[in-house]
Length: 226
Image (cartoon, rainbow, N blue to C red):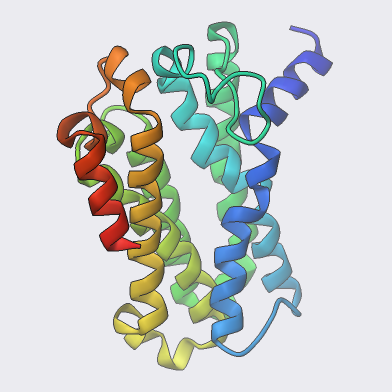
């Protein structure tokens, strides 16, 4: 495949419109700790939580959602919701996701010297990303665990920023109000997207919280957590 085509495929797999999504949770953590990215390690971690992290989160999952995505009207030509990744590109995108994972870890190393706990949360975020979308675990196909995994993913990104500037208080961040809000709101948003994808996932025999509980019950769970 020519380089321009591969680059275009990689660019789309990372969903550029979501580059700021993972980054925002990191920035919220920093801001709630009373700071903003100002040192080189903090800026490097911000870069890690933009395009590279999005590729890991979105690209890896989309490869294994192919049968659902080709049936999903949301996954057409839209840059917002992404599009199905062609089978011919799967191996390349998967390899790129592995490289991006290593890139995120390397970019987080300087920040880990500033706060060792930061690397722990970065690794949790990466682990949750792979566990959610990729075999052999693939929690997306395990009702309720899919939502809990999503909450954990974005909570750990938030925690990376929070403990980076607030290391002396980071032992209590698990029970802080912002921490609880981040976890449950992200779990609820995952439930909402599962409702939107229920028909396509059901047709592709992907068992999500929405295919297991139905659209209305899942929407109710989503409203409660949000």
